[in-house]
Image (cartoon, rainbow, N blue to C red; front, top):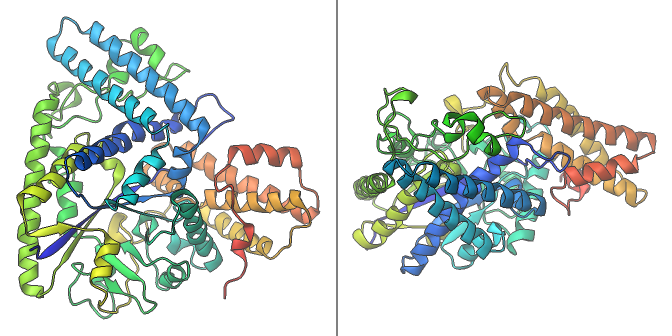
Amino acid sequence: MAVGYLAFVLHAHLPFVRHPESDYVLEEEWLFEAITETYVPLLHSFEGLKRDGVDFKMTMSMTPPLVAMLRDPLLQDRYDAHLAQLQELAEKEVDHNQHNGHLRYLAEHYVQEFQMVRETWERYDRDLVKAFKQFLDSNNLEIITCGATHGYFPLMKMYPQAVWAQIKVACEHYEENFGRPPKGMWLPECAYYDGLERLIVDSGLRYFLTDGHGLLYARPRPRFGTYAPIFTETGAAVFGRDHESSQQVWSSQVGYPGDPEYREFYKDLGWEAEYEYIKPYIMPNGQRKNTGIKYHKITSRFAGLGDKALYDPYWAREKAAEHAANFMFNREHQIRHLAEIMQRPPIIVSPYDAELFGHWWYEGPWFLDYLFRKTWFDQQTYAMTHLADYLHQYPTQQICRPAQSSWGYKGFHEYWLNETNAWIYPHLHKSAERMIELGRLEASDELQRRALNQAARELLLAQSSDWAFIMRTGTMVPYAVRRTRSHLMRFNKIYDDIQAGKVDSGWLEKVEKIDNIFPNINYKVYQPLG
């Protein structure tokens, strides 16, 4: 009989990057890489677990921008072409390395991997949302939602209608795609502010996730820390991240992904191959880029990129099995200790970005597969659970008020509000004011109704926390700046046109085709609350 629970939670999110106005935009490959390296390998693992009778349980957020992109015919076509090019390069590498046994072995590994991706992609008719939904229907996967465009709620709280729109549009989009309302929400960046729970409850959601210190500094202090959820006064349940299990996987210093046997992320064929040879597989303008074919292992934390040894998937897989066993061993001891002192079953909530598993940590899906199997067959201390199932089983919890928090640098809001990105917020706030004003209008005709709905889309897209995050990290900054400005400019043009009583129908039609997320949005979601 299990004495506690482990809830593994993956946050699957990418910003809405779709550019029908251009033949090639590098940023669309964020999605293509995630499909190849994270989403399809996870599905492949889930299929194997089901086939082998392992009744695995995992919670996974799938954000509205990601769901929209995965179901977009244009992006599906572009991914088809991207994958075909990858397959061609891998086949070419087999021939190119016929006299180097180890490199040929690695090239053949990629040929097999990309073929598996192709077969999975086509088996689900290119619809990975449908693929994940089957595991929702079998109760192996609990899929939850997030903010409509991953807006950073604490920096929007002075306009509750703007936060409400992020939550309500996300819930409606989820129901359109999964055929049922969501039970829970991954707060964007796990960022919470006091009072947010009222909007969450009003939308019909049962629970949300925040970082551990959001619970640890709650008022009153929760008796069981992060090892049990709390209820807010509104009835919403709050789960907090467990620091110990998170550090074992996340940490670049002590976490599993830094092991010397694992694949080196930063050494890619696209940067290392002879230029004329690799030219057909890099950017159309001739600039090099990552291809996803990587031949080296981490080797040592102190080894420079030129000193990396060749990778071996066999030994990396063995290491993933070893790390899965270690993770399970640690959770067994942690849960047994907690169960003794709490005198009730603890729950360990282990949340991670989904893209860590496969994209950043190539062996991550293997680790998960081994963990689910070992948990099922090799121990009886804990059971894996969904967050909603845990609440159903344990409907009584301590009532507290969570503390403001996020899982960003230093745990609060400064990563999304600092000298690199502070300039965006006066514009976002002014646009939110204007959208609330537009939300009170009654559309005079179909054209104006379309314009009002598009204004809502543009504001939501401008509010994405990804743009502020990218500006802070210093990578791809021009793209993030351009996206923020373009959505704000489109919003303001629509606002001005509506104020002047003359909507530019030709321009609006073009913008609707570019920013086509949330086809069923209703601008009245910005009407005054209460």
